[in-house]
Length: 460
Ligand code: PHE
Image (cartoon, rainbow, N blue to C red; front, top):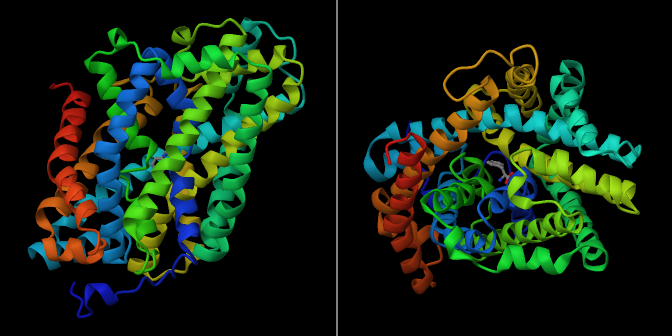
């Protein structure tokens, strides 16, 4: 495959974002998800709080920042879906189209992740209904645990909510960049921010904000070890949606005149702020109810501990409902970014309409998601390698495929792309930022990602 058009003149056939703000909201929508509101508070809890938060922030700056810039840049220069963009750029820069496999790995990871992400997002919809009906009012810990276990064991309930969530995701993608994605993020992102602010004001007036604050921001370095540093690095990756091709795909719709440095700053600021505020809200509620943050493992924090707290507090029905709807919104804007790359690929390579491509890709992912649904019930005893099918999907995608493609994206951008091409695509006038980016993208980020990767496969 070859193209005669010069890279800076290439256009995407899917259209462009209408403004810089639309792009920032879309990538922030992708970044802000279950990772920020569910996973970040939980891993901060088990890793001892403040010192972990500091290491995480460092990872965001040293790894997340250069890789995000690289991915947006590759997307905008290729102007195609992540696979074709990498093939095209690979040929232009190195003479070899084999780089397309980096896009393939990312797309496969996105497929797997969306299949289980949608099931978990379905849980949040179910919890929204339960919370709004007052189900949690006055429940004891064992009852709340029972609610979660019942859901996990019910094939039909999970099936219904997983189906609803995937259907909405498909619908948005089918409508295209401006009519679908952009319209949704422009409504949901401010809504999400507003809800989070309401919850923040609630914990300031009613919760135990001082203890929550101290836990999140007072570093105690005795609590940090090698594994928490690795957890912080891995999470920086996941929370910024890196390595999956989502950012590359969204970058392909970014108008040429927009500064990649500026937009990346805004996106990372937004993602980090929301994670920190979400952590503050969650821990202020946890401490106010005399619960122990380090005891709360995995899914438990959001689906077992918080409902308990909502069940005890005065306006718990209201705050519980808006909390779970917040989580659902955050998950939806991430889910659409997980579906877009493969749909863009199908439109471009198979010449199908956007509607049909969205339905086909969405349905395959929906069907794959059934295996996650079954992992909680019929297939809960079918375990190998890392556990249930769901555990294996999560491990394979998050710990193996993501670091691999993220590493290759940044290595390509830093080492294989000529200085002329990258400085042409990034702001040429910003020499200082460019130098920092290139140093981080060539040395710091690849080495750090390599360490995460080796750790994930058990070598390091
Ligand atoms: N960044 C999202 C989150 O924090 C997860 C995600 C990963 C979304 C990769 C899209 C792509 O939940």
